[in-house]
Image (cartoon, rainbow, N blue to C red; front, side):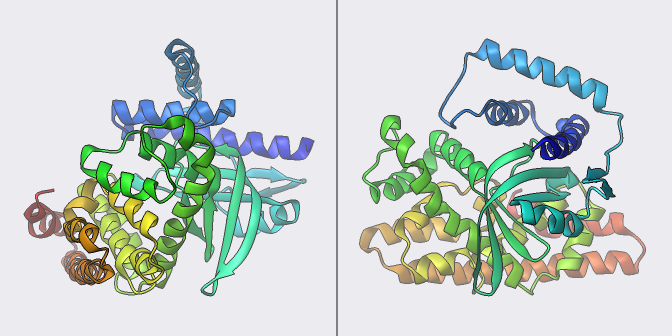
Amino acid sequence: MTNFQHITAQVQHNCTISDSRYAGLYSVCGLALRLRDQYKWEKGLDPWVEKEPSEVLDWIGRTEEAWEVLSDRPFKNLLVFGNTYDLFDTHALNRVFHRHGIYYGAGFGPRLKPTFFLSDIENETRINGFSVIILGQERARDLFAAPALTQNGSIIIRKKTAQAILWDQIAYVKKSGRQALQYALEHYGLDKNEQAALQPNLPKLTQEMMGTYLYHEIGELSEKVFDREVWREIIGTYPQSPVELFARAIKDLLADTGEKGTLNYIVSNKKSAALGFYIAFQDGVSTVLFPEVVSAFDAFLEEENWDVIDEATLAGYEKACRLAVQITELFKRGKEKSDLEWAEKEIENKLIKPLGL
């Protein structure tokens, strides 16, 4: 245990350095919410527990003071049982950690923020030919915490993170998503406004969402339209830009609407609650790219005709395919011209602005 406390401290050190360097990527409100979530994780609080604002603000103040000290420090490779490993060598590190029931994640999140975590492995299985690892308690993490991801060909579900995210999504659902959320919750005999009933049912609701997360990742791993290497090159060329966010949104839409993706899983299995959650939590670029599914859900509520969701899914997939081809062609033309700035402007003017983004 002493060794793992030392390893955990090393991973958390890199997490804190990443947060100190990249905190400016978030809006003031966005950063405050992420810090609140980090506080809850560090203190071991349930998602619905809210401490006194003064207590949280004191903790944020101490965190920001630590950032000032660490912001110029380099990331450190990991010393594990007497051997030093590159901090991004997840293959080698997980070969060591696996026998101890521990999983290590490292990579780059949105806007190419370095992101790291260390978690206990709760379960491992195979679904549709893919290795799936369910993680439980998180030992170390940074401000960016996704509920699911792919790493080294495996699908990783961060269950504790998923629970916290789902709680906030329910608590702060936008007005346009309230009807869909209520539809989903009614399948469990619940109401959004009855928090006392929601709390003990959060694990059950998270289990529902885990299927959605899982098949989004399966859809992403199975999708071949948007070449993965080209996609990585695009987001690496234009980090922290509208083009990066747009390319990520296209990739997500392909994963959701593809043959093996989220919506086909929901439709094939008639997962009514999962559909309600999916519609309720649509936001940002996805709302603009895929309005068809929202309209289809309105029609679905009248007779629960799954065909209308299926048709919207196909329409969304065809649109995502067109956009993937167009953004790829413009990017490649920019490379041929040795003018990636031209490609960025063309992508913005021809693909992003016409959508009103």
